[in-house]
Amino acid sequence: MSPIGSVTQAPPPAARASGARSRPPYTAFVLSGGASLGALHVGMLRALYERGIAADVLVATGLGAFNAAFVASRPQTPATAGDLARVWCSIHREDIFPVSVRTLVSGFSGQRNHLVSDLALRRQVRRYIEFADLAEASVPLHLLAFDVIAGCEELLSQGPALDSIAAAAALPGVFPAVAIGDQRLIDGSVVNNTPISHAVALGAERIYILPTQERWHPLGRAPYGALDAAIYGLGLHVDGRLRADIARYASYAELIPLPAPNSLPVQPTDFDHAGRLISEAHTASRGLLARDGADRSHLSLVPAKADQRPLQRAS
Image (cartoon, rainbow, N blue to C red; front, side, top):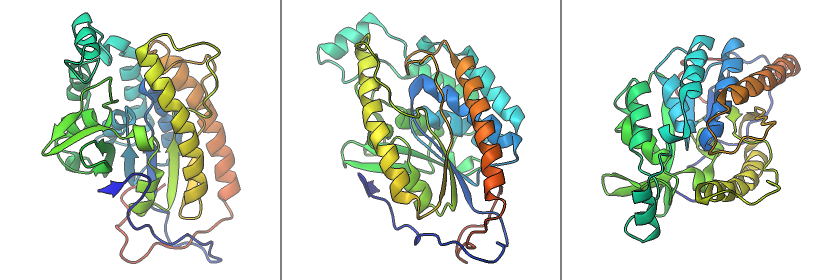
């Protein structure tokens, strides 16, 4: 376990080397939380896979954990991104956030510590995730949650996939905390929405950052309800943390933030615009990756340490 804002011992800052590197860099995809804005990840993944870029390790939190788990047991190809797109285009808010009068009343009266049951979310996980234990994922999968008892971040790398994904997406006050052993786990995005730090600690040399917002813009109005207000407040924290982490870890690994366009803008509780979000993210990411590939063609990075885990899928 690692305390808030810290990371397990990271490798020394990467330096540029003059010679040609002998192998591709150990590559991580980091998927952030963001509720319905997780649809943006689908367009980003499609653009990555179209260029033959695949992950050696996946690190995710929030509903990014669902997306990461989906691709972790399937080939890293545009077809898989297409399958995930169809899932997102079929999901409505009640499939994730089913609001009932009973849970709302019991939550506001203090009888429960959450407003929404996680049973609907768990149904989606059972339907689409193809392994029972995180350790069974064909691509190493690490999901970030937060242990409310110990007061620290918890990176889940093995154990029941259903509980782990539910825990990583358990927005506090909205979903119930998830019990795994003696731990009570909630959404890791409340402290670290884009867990770059953990990808660095896992030895990643190149990190593609898949965010759900480029910049948190003012709404121009008050949030409509309690759920909107909770997620809006979280977004304010997320924006500052992501910018700080990119600056902090840029010397430890090559960081490539993908664009997260949201022209409407779609709110994190609105699941009716997945197709638009996917399309916008795909177009923007495809353009960035084309430019980035050309800019990087003359660079060579230092080779990995001898004790680093072997590559599985190199970009």
